[in-house]
Amino acid sequence: QVQLVESGGGLVQAGGSLRLSCAASGRTFSSYTVGWFRQAPGKEREFVAASRWSGITYYAVSVKGRFTISRDNAAKNTMYLQMNSLKPEDTAVYYCAAVEKYYRDYARPSNYDYWGQGTQVTVSS
Figure 1 (spheres, rainbow, N blue to C red):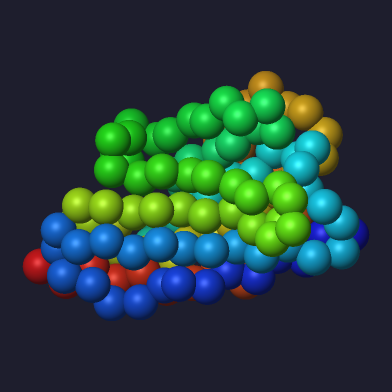
Figure 2: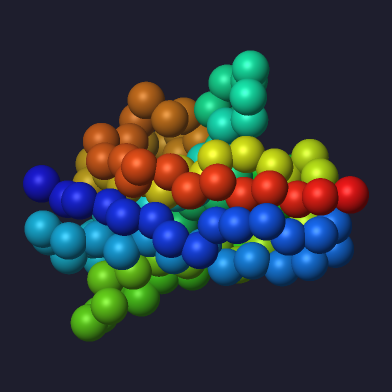
């Protein structure tokens, strides 16, 4: 079992930056695919970014060039989402997720086994 705990959300003005963290416990997730998803009110949960254990990363078109996913597989067993040039449409609850089994579709939420509790990100205009 892997437990995930997010932190770092908050309120920021448009154009600002935030860094989300997701700490894993229970098992090291160095061999896992990890991802970030978000869900705005009244909308479905959507893919934001993912990272394979090999270091390959993927991004949603809407965040590419502004967001960066990274991971520390060593002592910290933590992953991060650096968010720059934030826009009001980035407002959502952000979730980190992890899965050990390889799935080609890294953007499908149902392919992930472990989820954090979510952290609110609000971007004001």
